[in-house]
Length: 163
Image (cartoon, rainbow, N blue to C red; front, side):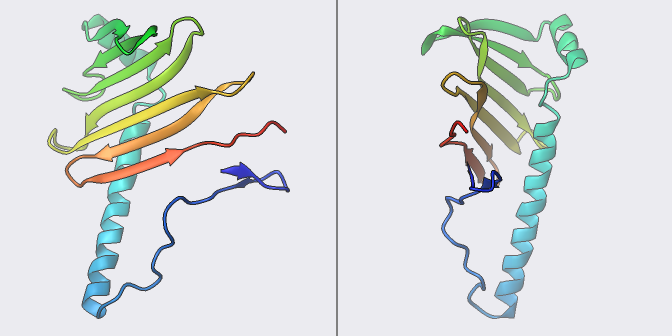
């Protein structure tokens, strides 16, 4: 995404152009349309679940702390970072991990490991943050993986320009 000459955001898709009309007869096209609608509905459910975690709810964090479900520790691959892991935040068996830069006191990464209706229907969300030169922290990339349906959504933000 970048700003156009009119100052409005312009999105550039990284995906190859979609085939306007699937090949095959009416039955195959109907099946394709049904699957598309099914995956769109499922993606909307994933989005709704992710929104229940972001931003974290103060009362739910306090409850997790009272139940002893919050741990804090080092990040082995980054000695300048610390991670906060919250277990059973929204659902039994889920986890939310926040990784902070200790020196800058900024969020580096946010991870959610949860599930839709059944624990076998796992969903993982990873958000990477980056700092603009002399600017704010921003979402650099976002990846959502749904394990059982093998659905993956990845978003990358780049090429920010100072205006």
